Image 1 (spheres, each protein chain N blue to C red):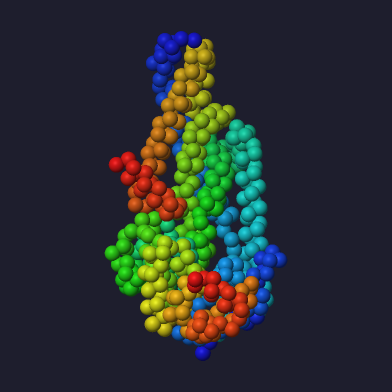
Image 2: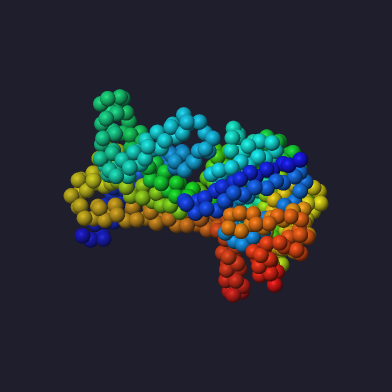
Length: 242
Length: 253
């Protein structure tokens, strides 16, 4: 069953076409990695799925509903978590409050329930001892793991990752990718925009190669990475892997 | 002018000056606080962006209030407070109610400060990383919740120096409220000068008192700011900040 259906989506910023006719599907429990050069529209596509941008044409159907026609965006967003390249932890509160805030405000949980869930998720990402730390005192990798825990606290059905490791020092990339890998093993539905090819190959059920606002190639990781059909894909992979 | 005479005036008329200081501080402090409240409401409201799913009615209402707020801000920033003071005082006095001058003074300075505070808060809000808003919204929080719990606390923190500066400005600018004859420092100085006929000395004393008040205030605010920077709740803009701070610390050790 498809939980996300992208149909002929088009999007441009002031005449600059970013997405020209993109279509694909994501099934429940599937991990889809979006790869491609910078500026190929991967992040924009992800932002459209979370309604941070509006699409110009086409349809995005998530969990059976056309998201452009939703009455209540907030109701939708709590089911679709998003993890950002720049972490975007709330700077004015500590790690625990970061994870509790939306649970209390959006899910209307009691403080105690929210606290327990937050601690459970923070333990999962290995940061239980940092609950009272403020974001400014954490490393990039720790921040990103908090951001993942914060998204998980909402018990989302889908998680979107927008280049989760691009702003990290190389030695911190692993800790974040491991957390995402664990989620993949638990059959979380995820769309991941990434430049980590090794990771994409390991973790994904489907890889989509985007270039210039269109999908040039999509398929199993083994197909894309080992036997890419398209010349552009081949060039891109050769450049990035070497 | 001699320093001796200044001291004589100060000794003889200190109760007048004290009353003036008291009134000036009351008016500027309450004016700044109420002005801050107005600024939070007006600046916060102006910075809110409605969702595209919002009804046409609420979009219209938002527009209309935005325009009114803009007129309010432009009017009070674009006219002298002295004129505002006489205008508002007499307008209310003759048309509505015979009100207390002190109340009038606080109302005028509050509304005036509110106009400046709105812009301070609005720019404070704009200085908060847009990612903070996106993160909150992506968790399903409404724009109102995001504003109250995530954006405003950080905006106020960023705007803190500018907010404090408004208090210092108010200590000085409340002198124009003598036009509606409340007993603030300038008004008191005028009466002292009128009694002694020593204008230079009297106003020199007045100037020194104003200077003392503003210096003490900025000293206090500076320390509050330092305290804020050194507590755990501080949030430097980026990692590079902390990193360079660490390096600087290591170098000094």
